[in-house]
Length: 266
Ligand SMILES: [Fe+2]
Image 1 (cartoon, rainbow, N blue to C red):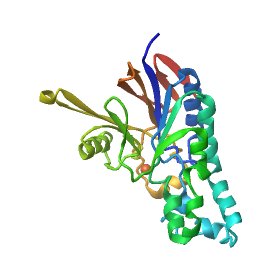
Image 2 (cartoon, rainbow, N blue to C red):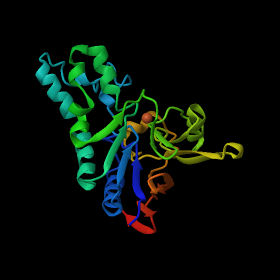
Image 3 (cartoon, rainbow, N blue to C red):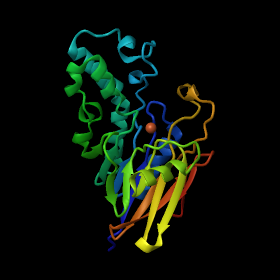
Image 4 (tube, rainbow, N blue to C red):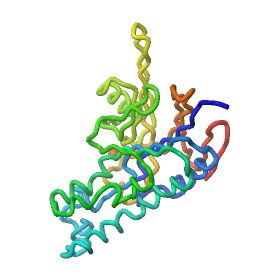
């Protein structure tokens, strides 16, 4: 019998622009890994239609749906818009039925709340993480993007991420410095680690940015031509339930990973 726990962490699927092959690989790994805990670190839902970038363009939510007058229709369309992401959240529940689940909403995930705050504040109380994605019903604990990072296991805090640097590892470093704690985060779409040891405090701060799971070739990502992005996710074995031994899992170009000594190909 061991008290070690298995933790699986991923972010930035940007549904419906997720990389389907990488996502399948992620789920087949999850099935084998049998995590005790699954954390999602933001930008699971892309929500382009609620973005300020689509404001006034044909793909803006209210324009695309011809401004439904009646509230019931409007709420139905909102639910439809988030249904793929809801499916994703419930697929995790199904794949890891006993796991503790946590999600740190990212800047993309909360676009819907900002949008209706501006356009239809009267429906705002009916648009919630549970109405959109079933988070409460599925047993997810969660934080919003503007919440502080959540302390999860041992020294590791999680958040979608605030700092954004062009260089892999640097966003992780900046957020470790911003918050003064060990951090695991998404947001940058890069894979990287950062360590800082203070010998006299007997402490090592650790920072991880855990890659992305989206389809870089999708037209949606043409807003930049520099995709210095790396696909991947993270796992950790939490020794005695206290100290997470973190590993970044790189997804190679042929959709292969090696995790816990085992090879998976998607
Ligand atoms: Fe983000």
